Amino acid sequence: MNLELLNEIDSFVWGPPLLVLLVGTGVFLSLRLGFLQVARLPKALGLIFKAKSQGEGDTSSFRALCTALAATIGTGNIVGVATAVKAGGPGALFWMWVAAFFGMATKYAEGLLAVKYRGVDEHGEIAGGPMFYIENGMGRQWKPLAVFFAAAGVLVAYFGIGTLYRS
Image (tube, rainbow, N blue to C red; front, side, top):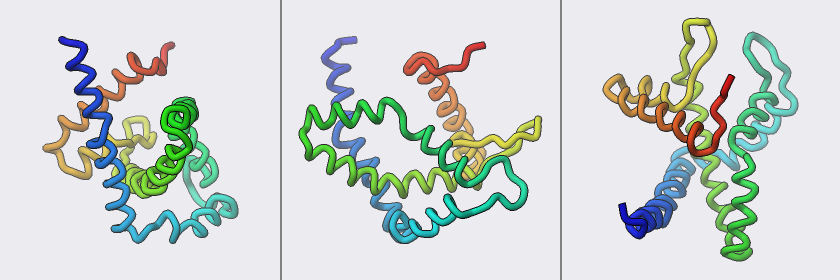
């Protein structure tokens, strides 16, 4: 395959279409959810820092927050900000804030779906994620997409970022 063709495909996919899709989804969800990023912030902070674990469950609210942040924020995000500011100037920081604000609604929707459609495996442990809500939320006819998503995640972890667990 020609290297120029791959560069053109890369520029197209990671250009305006992806930006419109990602930020557009965030804007749509923000509107549909009544800008819950702002409206529910006081309640969210209260639940995180004041709530006591009452009842059954694997983890507290604060531990769940820390786990979600650890899964979302990584070295790539930190280096990405520095690279964006170097390449695009300080205006890049503003647009990252805009995208992050609308991305909060997308993250909320993803978390909600993950909790709603999670399952219990054969060992009695809770299992979930995009594979589960694709299949359980959209229907059994979408199972090939769920399998593809899971396989793509494993391949990216193994070949892309090298974080696949090895014993």
